[in-house]
Image 1 (cartoon, helix red, strand yellow):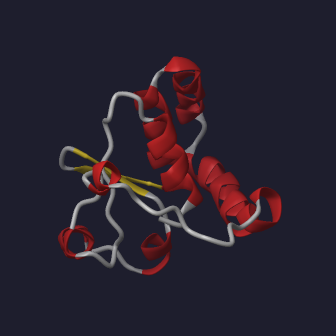
Image 2: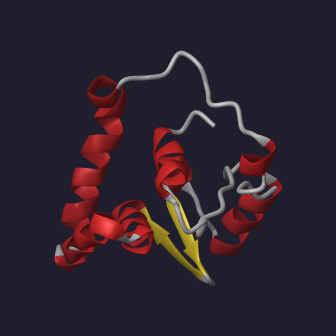
Length: 119
């Protein structure tokens, strides 16, 4: 529960749309094998939407779209070519601790919150 993006999505997922799994979990390893995920994708945000996988900026934009409210407005950036969006995603990912800080402790999940995690 130390991933800032996951914590942010949990806090803003008022419709309870999202579940989460680390790529090291049993569920995550199944996704890795099924999609043949290797290399850089092992350290990125992945959204499974039904049987389709979205990575990096595409995943983030779809999450924002599904969250609704003002967040769905960000989905307009889907028209920007993926290589440009992912370049920006990579810059943010590399600098996230410098720009957003790093927590000294991790969020302790409640029993209700544990239900959002696939194993």
